[in-house]
Image 1: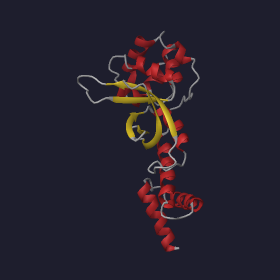
Image 2: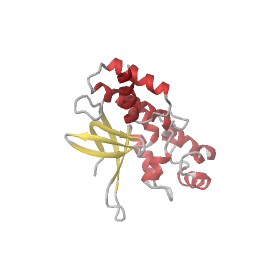
Image 3: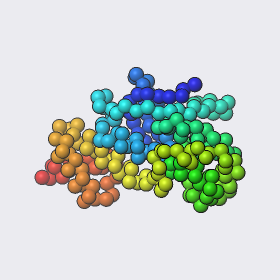
Image 4: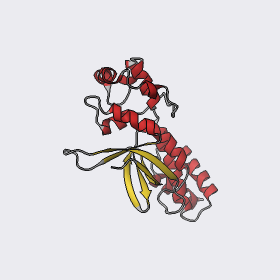
Length: 220
């Protein structure tokens, strides 16, 4: 049973949302609830995760899940142990498995727990994949059991995480690394990336941004 991973942040994929943690040369793919993504992106900063050198250190508390019907283990990661403990309770609700729970949690644990304790169906209904019926099941199953989590000091994200803004930030960082890797000064690379993305909002991948920068430099 894996309960904690301490290593280097080696990959981030918001589409999962998953990260890869390199632990002494062994990589683990970890599903991460959306509400933790801003913290992870802040941790990653502008680091080149594809390189071997300056990857940021990260530690995640792990919820490990495997069944006879799902023999391939699913690892779900959290920055704080109390968040993992809440997640364990959350997955006891009928119809909410680990994958659905992770994707539903686009606001912080304290926000969800307060909504449960206060019977705030509106907040719970806005969680991805939950709906009105799911909200009623969550309240019926967990009300009175998550008071401690409702009062916990965590990321405190009450509004749904803006995935488009987060993805934009990661594209910028990765594009700067890609341009810098071609031998250009990092500060210049950052300025060029900002310029092409400001000029064309349709540029939304590392490849298209990098090509746009190179075309502009060639034209110059």
